[in-house]
Length: 352
Image 1 (cartoon, one colour):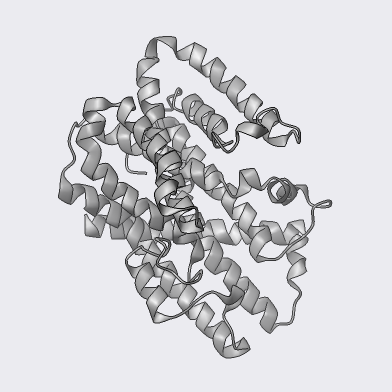
Image 2 (tube, helix red, strand yellow):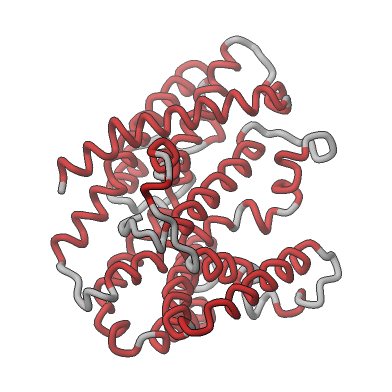
C-alpha cells in the first residue's frame, strides 16, 4: 500500500488476491446467482462464506503489517505527510466511484422507481460517504458504492494508529496484543454487538493482528526456515478446520476468530521471501497495484451490467455462464488498470 519494498512484494500480491476473492463473492451476491453444483469457479466461495466474505479481514491484517513495517524504522510519524499520503492513496478513487454509482442509481430510480438493491441514494448518506463515514454506525441503510464500508472503518484505525504510535514503538507487541484483546473481547461489552460495532472491532482486531505479526517476524529472523514450515502447516490446518463440518475447533470459534491461523500463516509465509523488481515485468507490477481499484470498481460495473441487461430485458442468469464471467473480469481488470495508471497515480502525485 504505502511501502513498496522487495520484502513486501508477495504481501502486495496477497492483498490483491484478497480483493479479488471478495469480488468473486460479490459477483454471485449482486447478480443473485444460485448455482452451487455446476460452476466451481464461484461455488466454493458461496458455500464457504467463511472464506469469501471474510477475506476483507486479511486485507485489514496486511494493511496493519505494511503500515507498521513502513513507520516502525522511522520511529516517528509526521502528521502532515501521514494524512496526505492516506488521502492521496484512497480518496480520489472513492469520490470518483461515488459519483459513478450515484449516476447509475439515479438512472435506476428514474427508470424503475427504485434504486438497485434498495440502497439509499440521498443527501445524508452522500455526506457520510464524502467524509469516509459510511459505516461508522451513523447510516440508516447501505448506500452508494457499498463495498467502501471496509475503507470507511479503516479511517478511524489510521487515526488511532497515529495517536498511539509512540506506544507501539515503546511497548511493541505487548501494546498491539492489548489492543486486539481490548477491542475483540471488551469493546462489545460496552457498545454491544450490532453490525457496525462488530465491523469496527473486527477491523481493529485484524489491523493490530497484522502489527503483532510484524513484531513476531522481527523476533524470528534467526529461525526463518522453521517459521516457513510452521506457516505451511498452519495454512493446511486452517483449510481443514474451516471445511470439516465437525471441526474440533468449532467450540473455540467464538473465543478466537476462525480465520486467524490461516491469515497469520499466509502473512508470515509471504513476508519471508524477497523479489527483485527488475525481474518482474512492468505490466505485472501495474496489475498488482490494482487491488484497491478492482475492489472499488466491481460494484459500479455490476450496477452498470444490471441496469443495461434489465433495460434490454436480458436475464441476469447469463452470468452463470463461464464466458460471461470472463467478460466481466476482463472489463473489470481493464478499467482497474486504466484507473490506476491514468487517474489514481496522477491524482496521488498532484496531491502529494
